Length: 291
Ligand SMILES: Cc1cc2nc3c(=O)[nH]c(=O)nc-3n(C[C@H](O)[C@H](O)[C@H](O)COP(=O)(O)O)c2cc1C
Image 1 (cartoon, helix red, strand yellow):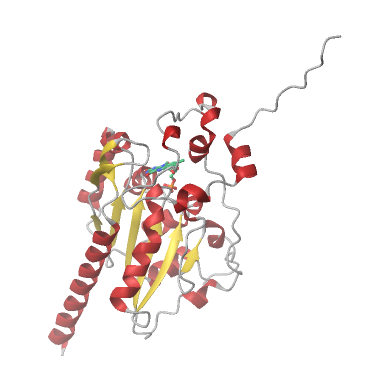
Image 2 (cartoon, rainbow, N blue to C red):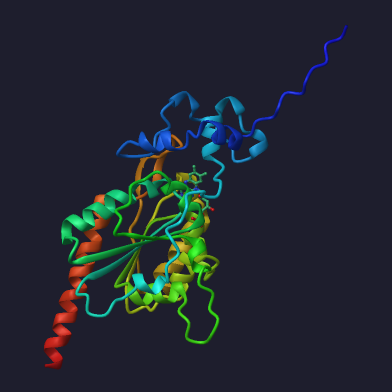
């Protein structure tokens, strides 16, 4: 008698993610220069076309397909309680992160900022794009750093004129905005004035009296794509308040070696600190002039 064969379930990388929950594993094993998949044999056969993904390579393949974050957000509080700026005598540093693996460097950057200034002298808040939420999962962010996710932009709907709007209030709160890493996608949005999420709305609604520092991070071929040079040129010509922290050459997560890696996280913090010192010095000069 002919055996009736049950059709084999077709597993997608997401199914594998759901059953094995391995996303956090490579997160924990990242090296200092780049994000490493622990099993090197799984490198090198990634395809951007899901139908072409080699399912024997599911661990790596799943990395190609972000799924929305399921991590619960902080309890919904009136967001304005995080945004009191008046006379707290602290520096207000807003950090933005996008959908790049270099987002895993955010905790180190935050730690260094607190080491430099001390907790009583600086306040840090973090804004994530929906794709950055995926990369931040499982990372340790200090409790006193408010993490803003896309959903929170929409959690306090404006019902009457004068009601606060999150991206506008965050802009007012911040002395400086560091976007590190800046993905190719968000770079393109910046250059073209698109503002379809919390982070890009912040950039678009920014008051140019305060600086924005951006640290692009992308695959070498994304970086050498002619669009990248065009977008960076637009930032240089049109956005005088934006400073681009040029990427560096390094071994990238995908195994490619070349330009596009995010500047060393520690250097990024040093540049941020120098910029804030310059701003303080200028403020001091202005005050002296007006006395
Ligand atoms: C595992 C993985 C790593 C990625 N790394 C980068 C990266 O380093 N730089 C980049 O520009 N895009 C990277 N991407 C693609 C971005 O996540 C994608 O373009 C996304 O739309 C960016 O969204 P955002 O700019 O809104 O954060 C990566 C995607 C995946 C799946």
